[in-house]
Image (cartoon, rainbow, N blue to C red; front, top):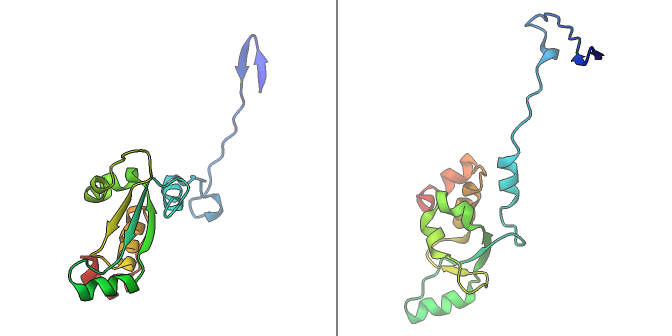
Length: 138
């Protein structure tokens, strides 16, 4: 590069490369957004909603005893992620009062809820998991 009469002049040299040369593959960076969102999955620090998930229901004396013995799983999430992918869940966790809203979910197995949430964050659910849990995921 040189300054010629007040104008920046840049010399560019080009050469034609054979298409079969695989070492000359151009570098195209990947967009990091998907990975950034996936890293926020279950991130307690940035979460603005908590789900307490258990597969027991609240009806009947026998069920109540069973619900006490099975512990609920806690899932931290972000309303922003839920708004498009699961708007019904986003509606359940509208902000109020300044505390982190905790939403009880009692009709889904915690593993299934985790798969669904992971998928919303851009994660992939393996074929084996889909086959094994197809009925519950639907």
